[in-house]
Image (cartoon, rainbow, N blue to C red):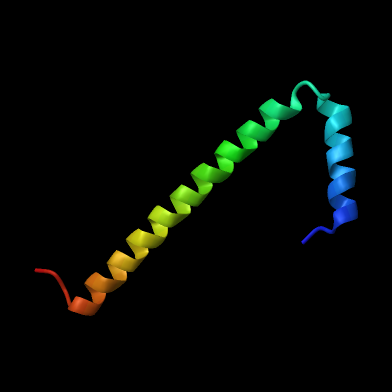
Length: 61
């Protein structure tokens, strides 16, 4: 896990590369991507749990 100094350095580099005007758009895109990843992971986890329950119940005929 990166420390505080690494995060500050990363943010400064991003600020220099993209400029202050694009930071809100970049943050929005990153936030949406994180939400999508969490939703996908949750659905995959739910499917895996359902598969395990089906396996415990025995073979379906």
